[in-house]
Length: 399
Image (cartoon, rainbow, N blue to C red; front, side, top):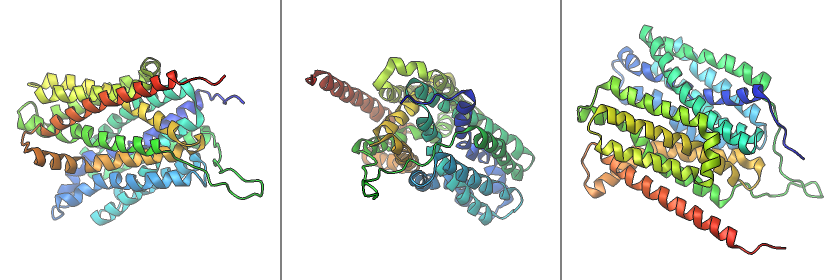
């Protein structure tokens, strides 16, 4: 039985799910104004508005994966959209910080659920080259959405911090597109025995958990780029906050371009795409370590974006393929997403621990650790993949 081919409308609807992942960036530019509005609140309390969604992602990515076993991916996405909208809009009208934090918990639940579904919907509807192409497009859409939503949030917050929450009304047209154009492929039900009882199936493989762990480790390293750029540029007098922001935007632009090209790149890189992506990120860190000026930081950001934009779709497709059965791909992606969230949350703590062991005090010490780990990891992974491929090709074929 041949796989159904979906048209452009369905492809756009599937890609639009990725837009929901970046709605969290709309309120980030408003944090400084919110802090001014609540002068008695501790800075750490205000920052919860930004950090809570990441923490909730770790929990609700797994919840979303489990829900796909009792409801369709489209219905899980619908629930997540409702939570994002309900958790986003009320803070524009109720000026209480504790209420806003509670709403961020609700928003974070939706954010955590939609994060793995943005990839799962692609692996559910598309296969082969088309799936690779759309997974690359998803990364590109995400990169563009991050810039647009953050810019919109900053523009609205310039008038009043409450206005940044009005940006969540954008969920409505996205929801309409998804409801009317995204097919509902139903629940991927477990096999039934002859007597009608449910057969206990293996859902995930050891490789699923290995890939999730590797992704957590990679995020521990690569997330130091986002968290340290502004501080390093300030400490070493390479630029101000605006220039640091442009470095991050340049990285996003690099990810966007590579995301658009990933479908063609994957044919050339094949099973080495993730290793190549990690290597590029490692090389970017090497350049960041020695960067003597702002323009060199921009070069590093471009290379980082190339690596990031290559690694993400490659590892997502690998994770989906690691499930014991295609119908459990969404659950596998949820486990991988959980690893991503854990890695990002633990990044500053793990790197601080490693710095302490080696007595590293430089402002770029985190990047030194990341460069060594990522380059070594990419080379080792490529060798393992090559050895496994050679072993498979050398194995005797049954006649």
